[in-house]
Structure formats: C-alpha cells, structure tokens
Length: 159
Image (cartoon, rainbow, N blue to C red; front, side, top):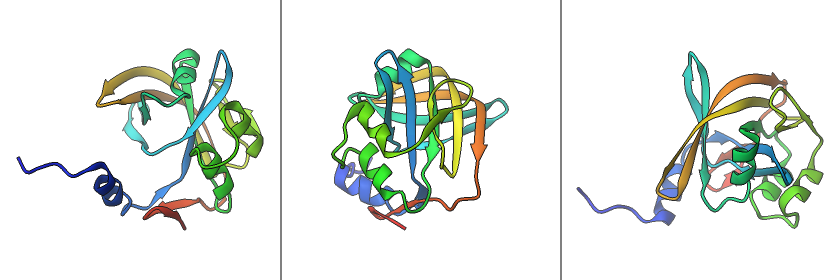
C-alpha cells in the first residue's frame, strides 16, 4: 500500500467536490446544538436513510445521542454568516449559534432552519465509531423544501 496522505492534503482533495453547505442540528437535554456538516449524504432510498459524520469531540454529538435524532439543514445562498457560526468561525458558541437564524421543528423535534433550501429530518437508528468519527445513520421521517438557491462549498470557500 502506498503511503497515506496527510490530513491537510486530504481536505484539499475533498475540497474539489462542490457540495451544498449543511448544518446538522439536534435537541438534547441542554437544548439545541448544531455543527457545520463536513459529510452528509444518502445511504438508501428504501428505507429512506441518511448519514452524517460527526467528530467524536464535536459538542453537538451529545445532543444527537440524547435526542435520538438530527436534522440536515441545507443553507441558502447568502447565509455565509450562518455557516461561519456553526463551523466555529463566528463569535457565537453552543446554543447561542441559533440566534443567527429563525428555527422551527418538523417531526423529530430537531431544530430546522426556516429559510433553508431544504431540511431532512432523521430519527437516529445507529451510530458507528471509526477513526475519531461517528457515522450517524438516520431514517428520514420528514422533510421540507423551498425554491431558494443553495450555498455551495468549493475549494475552501463559498460559491
């Protein structure tokens, strides 16, 4: 096997894919929590399943476990500020990050962004831990969609 690439090179490599910016949210015993998703994708259509990758040190992981749910909120174009806050680059921390938007809920009780491009509401079914990351598998139990354009992440910036 060839030698592995370092983490900085890895992030450059996957930065070549253009993806919709997503904030994953949940509500635990301490209230709402969320983080900027670095990986959120579908697993299957039957049953309808999504997965998100969560670093084991991410504070919102506890809320996902406690609430037994998560919502994937696709951020609309022009809301770089929201992505910055949930990505840890803003001044707000913890539940205060939710001051950066208007929030509601769908079926699970996870916070959902009112002006999102789309929201996928998931009931947690399983968590798998590998290499400092938890893969959270969730069954889709609700969704909402709008006609807004998405904020796109590409090569370390937003389009």
